[in-house]
Length: 195
Figure 1: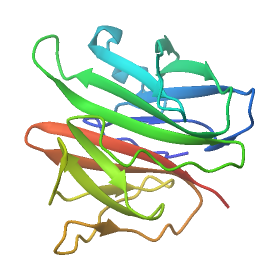
Figure 2 (figure 1 turned 135 degrees about the vertical axis):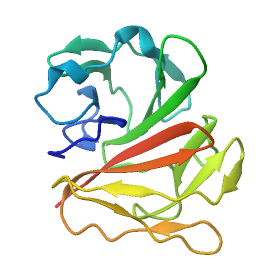
Figure 3 (figure 1 turned 180 degrees about the vertical axis):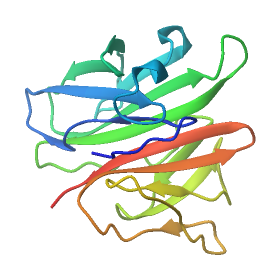
Figure 4 (figure 1 turned 90 degrees about the horizontal axis):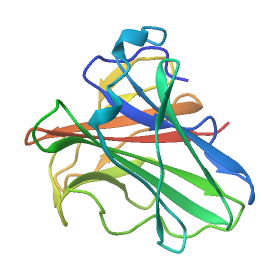
């Protein structure tokens, strides 16, 4: 678990990235300076949209409810494959959704492709592996830098190649969060790297 958070960042996570068919998958949304500082719990009214995309591409709305220092939602994993969870937040009470959050979990051992097309206005997409990423604005890739938050709370910028592809080598297992700021929007993609 990441021990340090930045006040301007928000992300989704689950305690694991692998579940069995039939499991209830719990997703948490966290925000703020540091774990334990509950005053940084976001206002539930700022959550504009929260869905889970099932392996067959059907969308199911989920409701994030405050619990302690985070918001929690759960859904039932009824088929094997990769589930994508998307949440959109507004920065304040007026204006467009500018925080676009994403995480994915694997259910069972059967792999299906991670969604090859972006489903949000701004999205971090995996490319060929769990450690290569690019940023899409709409349907086109853009050259936008990525920041990585590691499980120990350390933060670093990833090196981007000429095509806009960023790579990292996970030095430790656990939750990693990729963050991108682009044209007054912020997107994050959280992924769990196992042992």
